[in-house]
Length: 349
Image (tube, rainbow, N blue to C red; front, side, top):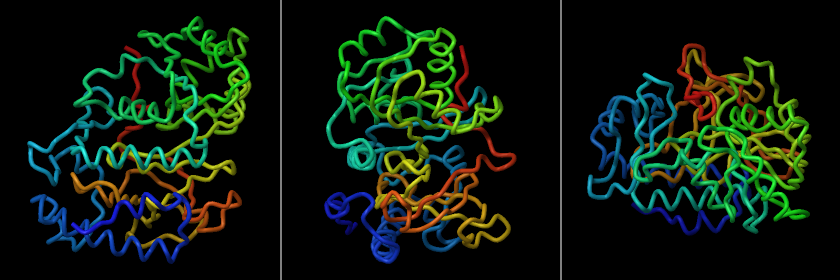
């Protein structure tokens, strides 16, 4: 496989315009197609039926063990989020793919938060990190983002209740300093914002709060993104509240939200919006199915995936934030698709 990942990682994460990115992706996707076809029997069979580099429905990872490595090369297995009774996806990683995904996540998020590792408040419980060899998308998300900070402190106890003593100690320790906060959307609202708001307790946590993992439960409570941002800024004193879009099948190459509310594709990933009736490319402003592409996975054929989400491409290379590449918004799950976001599938136990 002839892919120069050192070149890709030396690029600023939002530096390629449309034509530059197209040329880079043509070359690398050709190499990934050859690699996965030669090392994954099921993928090779799909290519023979559908043509080179087909977009695999994410649901296939629930039904088949899709991997391009031997059993001995498996470093960890990640599972997708799923409600009770659902079959979960299994994503097989070798050390190289895992390291590549972690490095890409760091590069992408650092473009929004800066390169300095900040004190980090994780709005979750540390009980989710159990088996490090096989863990859920929620655990993988916490572990991945925790590498961006230091002095990781968990805001919730094992019963998902607010641990005010720990939080207040964190606030006092880093008073007047920028911090990084991370959590999954519904849990941040339900287990962090609501209790703080009810008590009238305002924290002094200047910095950035990053959240992701699904809006469905909040939509059912009539909580919109603007209300979410304003609520969290009110109880934490955060300067920025940023969302991200991603999935366990393409860990690392997430799409971060900029200060103008747009989700951005980095050099490590791309996005296309497809019309449901014929899978042709939708126009800017037209709703369709989200197809995601990542240059990172070599241990499993997850480089081109058809999601179960709908979205709208909002523009290319011209976001007011100055970042090049496509930017878009997510409209929600397709009708009839399973709920699978880290937040949306959380159940109180």
